Length: 238
Ligand code: ADP
Ligand code: MG
Image 1 (cartoon, protein in one colour):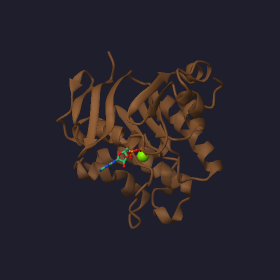
Image 2 (cartoon, protein in one colour; image 1 turned 90 degrees about the horizontal axis):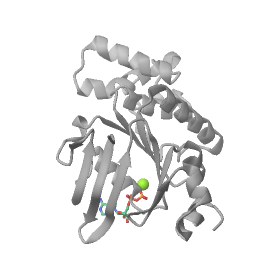
Image 3 (cartoon, protein in one colour; image 1 turned 45 degrees about the vertical axis):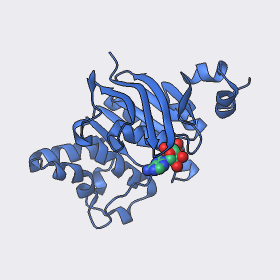
């Protein structure tokens, strides 16, 4: 059974149809990358899965259950955004702990989860620092830590590396792939960067103007692009 299913999913803002009937199955533990040009609907699709945007038509199922009406916190999902909005006045510890404070978890549980996340992300020596004292890569890791402590079944990433310079981007790419291996969680990763898509994905979903243009492994898309849009976007010969 799929962990996440999208069925004829649609989204309109007023008259504008932005997501135009998307069907997709995501298996547990899969690393799926949504790729496509700016404005094609990647963020809207993620926000719908997260429950931050209402569904206009169709269905979202998580673990076999329709979640269209379920509030974000009950979906077992955590989202990491592009602009990692950390609280500058709080320590790294408190930034990572923040979602657990909101849920009013007991202090011992908060401690255990923050320390476990810090260990995975190699932030143990930075817990009492403030975001301003960290490098860009460390700040991005804090943002990811905030997602990890919620112990989600599904992670959603919306262009998490696009604000970083090229060297740090390739380093973080490897870190995220290692994190995926270690946690074994399902990850859905949005990017407009073909290299990220080709190197990170188990499965790539190419989006074009609110529709899926093609779905497949990086090798499938490279060697057998269905159409010129995919060929052009992935950079494969056709
Ligand atoms: P991407 O993330 O692929 O760049 P988005 O999902 O942000 O694309 O946007 C897809 C389309 O939906 C764009 O044309 C954008 O202008 C439009 N859009 C996104 N959010 C809203 C909104 N809240 N109200 C109206 N239009 C929106
Ligand atoms: Mg976007």
